[in-house]
Amino acid sequence: MRSRLFASTFHGAAALLLLCFYCSLELWPALASPPVSGDWQINSNTEVVDLEEILPEAIVVTDGVTFTVHNSIFSFPSAANKAAIHCQGPNAKIVLNGTTLKDMPQAGVTGCVQIEITDSIIESGVSPTCAEAQCYEAVGLDGQSVEGFVENSVVRNFYKNIFMAGVSNLRITNSLFEHSKDSPGEDGELQFVEPNTAQGVTWEGGFLLLENNLIQDLTYDALELYSVANVTFKNNIVKNVGSGFHFDRGHDNSGDVRLIHALSNTFEDSSIRMEYTHDSIIDSNTFIGTNSVVQCKHCSGIVIRNNKFD
Figure 1 (tube, helix red, strand yellow):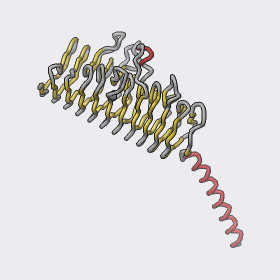
Figure 2 (figure 1 turned 120 degrees about the horizontal axis):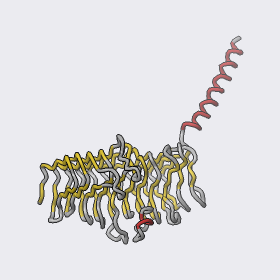
Figure 3 (figure 1 turned 135 degrees about the vertical axis):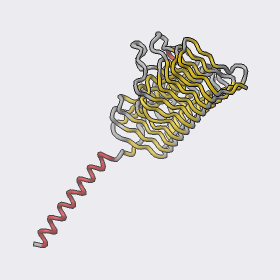
Figure 4 (figure 1 turned 45 degrees about the vertical axis):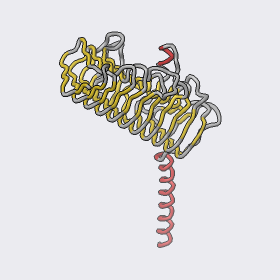
């Protein structure tokens, strides 16, 4: 009787261990390395740690998959006309921690709805002087209905360091957006637009926070908002840019801008220009230099208070 009980217990335990082994294959991300040629296709949850690679092409993340990178350096000199990392579908997720993406000839991270970026650098190899249609492809961070966060990170030397159509819930904090002093490119602004300009759709329930960031050394606007709502800018520094903040309708005269809060920012020789903007607050900002002004056209419900002009 005892031997039968032991045998039964042994086989049950073995079956449980085997089941747990297969569960671990399913639940834990695979540790992976890139291919020697072509795109690196991420088809299952994948984690990369302490890897330095010159990649032959782009990284492509399949919908429903999480790609996590820790303390790594990836270069993309051969990924012409591609993003360094591209997400295929709204349920693909990118996690970058202490990681550098550099030397890409075109875009950085594109198509990703879910992003978590901390202590990382995304840097273009060439910030192009180009026709406008081509330049919109040269973007550092690009996505639609984006949610997640960017913290303690650097995005630099892209024609648009950020271009996002719609934000679900995004925090951008303690980060740097710039063009390097030796960059040959132009513009570099952070641009957020409504998800569907053709129908004039503004963000529904979305929220964007930019706090404690430095935006500098750009040749055009630091920040552009077109037909969006529910945006807060707090304790940012904007300096040495072609202009400052610009809020307006979309290029096809779609929805107005509303519910913008610019609080306790510092603008050095840069301005806030508002058109078709409503129910917004400009409070406790510091404007330094003769070009630092607040302008408003076709606006209503704008509160401008406690600002300092030096």
